[in-house]
Amino acid sequence: MSAHNVYPSSSSQSPGPAARPDSKQALITVVTPLWNESDTISALAAALRKLFQDTSVKWEWLAVNDGSSDDTAARVRKEMRGMEGARLVCLTRNFGQQAAYRAGLDHASGDAVVFLDADLQDPPEFIPEMIARWREGARLVVGRRRSRPERGVRGLLLRGFHVIFGRLTNNVMPRDSGTFGLMDRVVVDELKRLPERNLFLPALRCWLGYRQATVWYDRHERAGTPKQTYAKLFNYAWNGITSFSEIPLRFISWLGLFLCFFGTLCAMLVLVQRIGQWFGLWTERMVMGFATQTVGIFLLGGVQLLCLGIVGEYMARIFREIKGRPHYLVEEIIEEKSNPKKI
Ligand code: UDP
Ligand code: MG
Image (cartoon, rainbow, N blue to C red; front, side, top):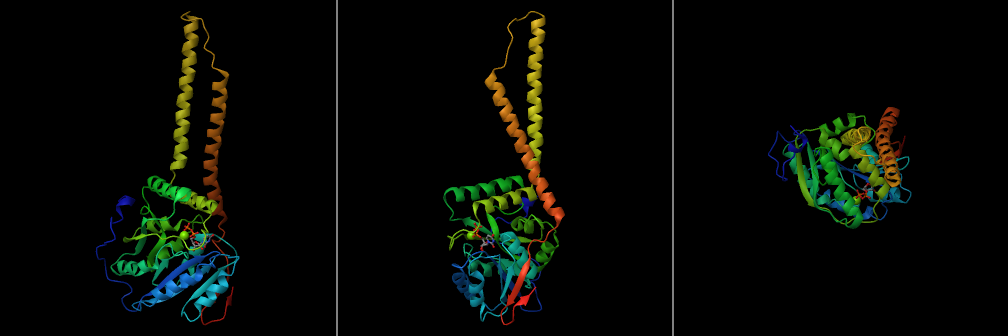
């Protein structure tokens, strides 16, 4: 079955097998990565407190401090006071959003794990709906954005990325979905088994398969300034494309083939001209102009460098995989109602 057949077109998912876990009250871990989110912590904590009032499940807040240089960690610790089971995993430096989420996966103990950005762009109010889909049998529930607030260049780039990514990867993940979603323990454990360093978790979790459902929502404005800078976003997007598509490499082969064909055509033209001269069909020599040659040299040089660059990008990723460095390093884990655990 092709990847794009996996998703239902609406949030309704036909009831699956028995709800999990059946024998005890389910534990849901909410993972939030934090990088210099000092301004947003209190709003986030308030939203989570409201969410945790739903006592049909047990909750665990797992915050991952991704090497913040402001007082994010101190503020989180303050907010976590009295929140049972809350934990703060502090990484040794800024490893990036995907690595922080991966740290969350590794430390979550829930029967299901929810990914939630700290900026509240993805509304936590939709988490109960995700849990309902999970109880109906979906192993993975993905949040899909009906609308997004980003405008201007950022909005254009984000929308463009989703279109291109969908085309290049045969829609490995639902269009306009991001990290916001819920994963069953089975999905979490399978994700943790995947060794790849170039993480693009929104697509990777969908690639696993299993029964999947979607929940539609409108994305909110961000609280605080965006932490995914253009450089980080570009890197993230390129990681996604190179992890799930070999089309850029195939494009080089097609381009090479086209240029070979074009070159052969030119050679034949020159040959025909020479033969024509031998037989005296025409006496004038067709000399290509200086400008044409210069443009040709620059263009071909550029194309070659571009192709070399694309191959290099894939090689750099292979290099990163081979080195096998960990996704992140943990400095300390702070558990509510316990002393900091030094690693
Ligand atoms: N984030 C992180 N490490 C980074 C960059 C971002 O942990 O290096 C976190 C950030 O604190 C937020 C989430 O990732 O909780 C999403 O960041 P942002 O809202 O800036 O990204 P966007 O909404 O553009 O995807
Ligand atoms: Mg955001």
